Amino acid sequence: PVAVQPFGILAAAGVSLASALLLRGARRRALDEAPLRDFAVWAVVAGVIGGHLVHLLFYHPEELREGGVLQLLRVWDGLSSTGGVLGGVLAAAIFFRARHIPFSRYADVFALAVAPGWAVARLGCFSVHDHPGRLTSFALAVAFPDGARHDLGFYDALVLFALTGLLYALERRRTMQGRLLPVLAVGYGTARFFLDFLRATDLPYSDARYLGLTPAQFGAVVLVAYGVARLARLGRQIPVTSPVTVERPSEARP
Image (spheres, rainbow, N blue to C red):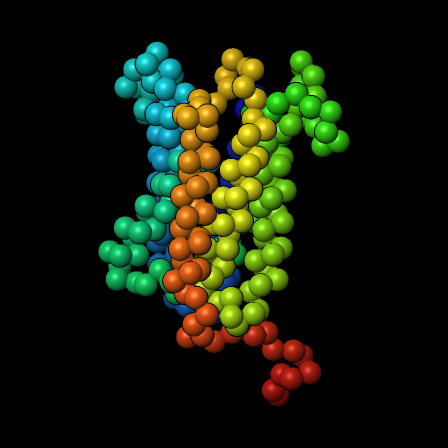
C-alpha cells in the first residue's frame, strides 16, 4: 500500500494555498497574474534546491560526508525552511529582473500569501515532530519518548498564523501599502531568532551551531535587517498605489 505522510500533505497544502492567495491578491489589485503563474515553478524548484543545500551544508554536513556527492541529488532527503526561503528569494530576484517587472508591485501580495501558506506547511513539521526542543514542563509541550519537549514546528506555525492575522489587519491601511513584506520579515525573523534558543541540543540529530547560533538564526538576522532597512527607506512617504477597497452591497451600482 502507498503510505500517505501528513508532512507531505500539509506541505503541499501550504504551497497550494500560497499559490491561490497570490493569484487572488493579484486579481484584487488589478495586477497581471501571468508572471505569478510562471514564477510558481521557479519558486518550488528553487525552494526545494535551496532547502536541501542548506540542510546538507549547514545543518547536517555529516550526511554529505557519509553519502557523498550523490546525497546532493536526494532533494527529498532533508529540507531546511531557511534554505527554502533563500532559494525563493533568489528565484524572485532573478525572475522579476529578467522579466523587467518591478517586484515592489507584487510585494504585498507575496506577504499576504506566503505567511498563511508557510503556516500550514509548518503544521506538517508539527505533525511529524521533526523539530524537537528542549525538555520542559511548559503547557504547550509535546510528549516525546524521553519526556515533554518544546515543539518548534508548532511554535513556528503559531507565529506565522499570528503574523497572517496582523498582515490582513494592516492591509487596508493606506500608509502600510508596500510595507507588508518587510513587516513579515521583521516579525518572523525576530520570533524565529529567539525561538531557536529552545531547540534541543541533547539529541543525536540536533541542529548544528555556529558561534552558538543555528543557521536559521543567522538567516533571521538577515530577515530583520532587510525588513528594518526597507521600512526605513520607505519612511513616511505616501504610497503611490491606491488602497484596496471592497465595494459594499449597498454601494454597488445597478
